[in-house]
Image (tube, rainbow, N blue to C red):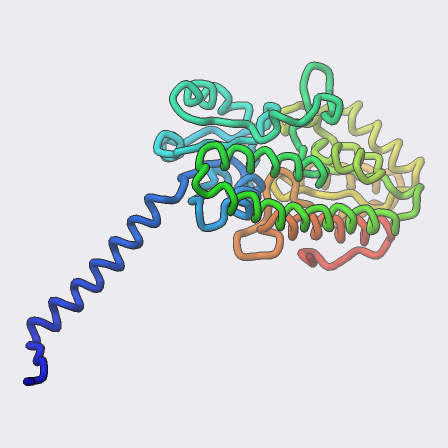
Length: 315
């Protein structure tokens, strides 16, 4: 039998065929993925951990972005229109986008990840709810359960995979919750007063035993006046507080002004570090994940309120 001999043209044909098959496989895999568009990085991180390889997640808001003031771009509208599924925080966090979500919901699946959290577990400020639920890790576990239910319903073919990944990741969040509880106990009881630029840490304080105060209200769109500053000054001096905190998505000038004002009255006040509030850190860093963000915040708060400020950025 004569050996098979391939010409250069034949080899090129087989090579091109192989590349074509790989391309087709990639296209089929991409087509099989659920295209999910979300608002914040925290929701993107939660969805990616539960969805894994079965989802393609796009977040509209990146590091340092304030969702309270965010306005959708034309590019955002295209991404939302093309998505198979849209997830947002709700509780008026993305206040300027709510009309968009309401209109989209008539045509495709659109869900707020907070929509199944019991009213009794939410914090109210007058007629409004505090939207910053991710600062109570137990509530973020509830958001994870809700996302799992949504993914299973929208893509039942991968239900077991979603449920298994959810179980694994939510177990990690339960461990994180226990760790936060332990770390906060290291702060002397009288020092457990957390002062930040805006009142984003209410759930954190409620869950882990800190008195939380902010210059602005639950939204960075809220105004504050001289009376608010005076009230904070009085609390700081009366309780011998030596550290307040800036936030990554809010201008530091408000807190810097507070520090100068308190110093003018003879009380030393330091900026204890930068906390991630309405957005996570940069992608590719520990603070660019939900767990890393929480750990960074807790380390920064505990170090400063104990009087031993940690190095900025230490996770």
